[in-house]
Length: 132
Image 1: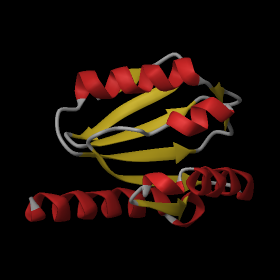
Image 2 (image 1 turned 90 degrees about the vertical axis):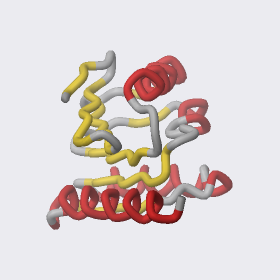
Image 3 (image 1 turned 180 degrees about the vertical axis):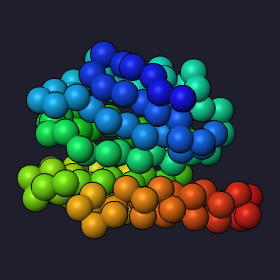
Image 4 (image 1 turned 135 degrees about the vertical axis):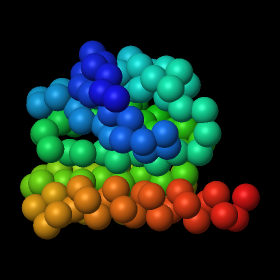
């Protein structure tokens, strides 16, 4: 199921995987991050994975970088990039948030990365369910 937010789309690919597609040219700010958190609280009740599809070019404010993807039940996050610029932005975000110890992977969308990202998330989430 696909949901329109003020800055892009959230799609529930299955019960526990959410795809995020941010609109072209957006600068994600704290209000938008709060909108993300409200969506997750409303639609996700258990452990989940996030598939960030960076098909569009967008940036984050510094404050947004510090709070993006801070979800209690998020167990894995996959980023799919389509250009060197979006890969660099994603890697810099990971470095900034290293203390959060995200369980994450980056995939090239130009090399079937979206499908690989989805399969990786499914694998990570199935492993977590077995362990608990």
